[in-house]
Structure formats: structure tokens, C-alpha cells
Image (cartoon, rainbow, N blue to C red):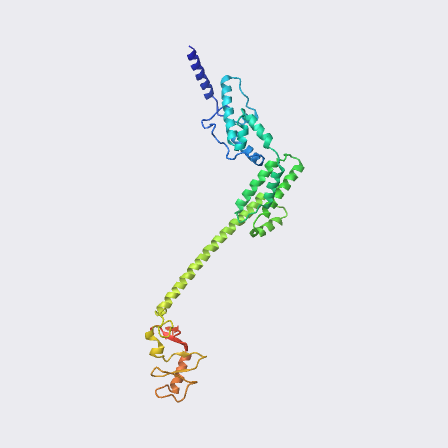
Length: 363
């Protein structure tokens, strides 16, 4: 008979617990285990208590367990609900211990109530440390963009602003003095944001500061961010144009080279006799003889080309050429030909140290 009563009592207890609604602080989801870490940040001490406590409050609010740290959820006199309360208290306590550093964990692991742990941590670490405020304020004033994107720079700066505001926790008020202080606080943040921008945004910064009504820091961020987007878009277009010009230039160079090779197939050939480029030894003028259209340099002595391919060194053109040489009439006609413009199929090639020669492509 006693076993039947105990079994009936267990069934009634389980039934009562199962009827708890999700909005009840005593309700525990299947995932609410003692090994759960509900915040990603661990409490280290005064330097991050504000951040940690805010994160923990948000997480406990989602779990509907705020009452277990502020004392509003009191223990019931009902046996079944009292046991459920103890269970919930233990779960919340482990969540707190899982989110503190190892040093703090050892000091709180023997606590029995989540409210006691929360109160002790608050009284110990919820303090305005002058060194923490000084270091954070100095970091804000020295923080610069340093080639970061405007969005990344503003995001990091905004985090430090919120940390400082959370540490100071100035009282809220609706009076005129409070509004003036808020305006002054926003002005300081605007100056800090503009001072940290890279020098490439100096013009934008000057334009913003010259406005009769200064923008808010959010509006200033939006303006500078649009300027950054415009620059990135312009740089992308310019890069594409430069690549296109380089491609066309390279194409033109290749075409010019192929055209030159087509006009003079011997462009890369070197003569083994005179060591000049553009012809082979079989077509060297010094061996086969110079043609009649060879033009001598102005600063060299004149050369007379004879019929037997021999070159005579003379200070000038003689009116009495040697046997087999050019007559004065032939020389006059030759000079007139030299003054004429060469035809298009003539290629320039330097074949000796004495002449700039105009040679056809088939030589």
C-alpha cells in the first residue's frame, strides 16, 4: 500500500511540473543543462564587469531566469515547486560560474544561491576604476583609421564609446542641462571620429566642420562612408581603363613587330663579316659591292662607287674619273636620285661604319 502511495505521489509531482508553462520562471527547457555557457565573455574583474553583467542579464532574460539573481522569484512552500525552485537555482548558479574566470570561480564555487553570487560579484567589481576610465579614454583619443575601411574604423570606435558610457553610467534626466550635456557628449564623439580619419578625407572633414550646424556622428559617418564608396567605384573604373589601354598598347606593339618582320625577314640576322644587323654575309655590301643609291654620311669622306665594286677614297668628286669610274654626268644624276624620297619598300639598315644605307627588303 505504501509503495502505491509513493508511486502515485511521483506521478502527481511529474504531472505538476509538466504543466508549468514556458513563461513560468520554474520552467526548464530540455537544453537548460548545468554545462551550458550562456554568454561568450568571461568575467575577469572591474575592467569588463559592465560588459559581462549586461550580456548575462540579456541571456537570463531570454531564459526567463532574472528572478533567480535579483531575488524576485521566491521559493514556494509547496514541496514539489520548492524542489523545482532548488533545481532552477542550481542551474542558474552553474551558468554564472561557467561565465567567470578560473580565479573568480574558485571563490564562488561553494556558494549555494545564485542571488548571493550575483550580489557579491556586483559589490566587488561594479566600481568606477579611474585607471580603467583613463586608459579607455586615452585609447579612444589616440585611435585612428590607419587604412581601415570607414565602417570598420567607426565600428571599433563606437564599441569603445559604449564601454565608456557603461562604465560612467551618468544619471538620466529630462531637464535642459541634461540635454545640453548630451549635445556636448555627441560633439566630443564627432570630433574624435573626424580626428581619427586618414588624411585622404581631410577635404570631407573640412566641409563637415564648416557647416553652420554640425552633423551628428552618425550623419558624419554616413557622409564619409558614401565618399569612400564613390572613391572605390572610381578607382575600379580607372583600373579597368588602364588595363584596357595596356592591352591595346601591347597589341599595337605586337602588330608593329610583325609588320616589320614581314617587310624585312632578315631583321634579326647578323652579318659575320661586318658584324651589322639586317643582312647575311652573302648580301654584305662590303663583299658584293655597294649599289648606286647608297647615301654617304655628311661627316665622313665621300666615297665613289666604281663599276667593279671597288671604293676609292678621295677628298671630293673628281671631274676626271679613273678608267671604268663614274662620269660627272653620272655623279650628278646619282646625287639627284639621292635627294629624292626613297620608295616605301626600302628598309633602313646600317651595314658599315661609313654609310647609312637604304636597302630593299630582298637584300
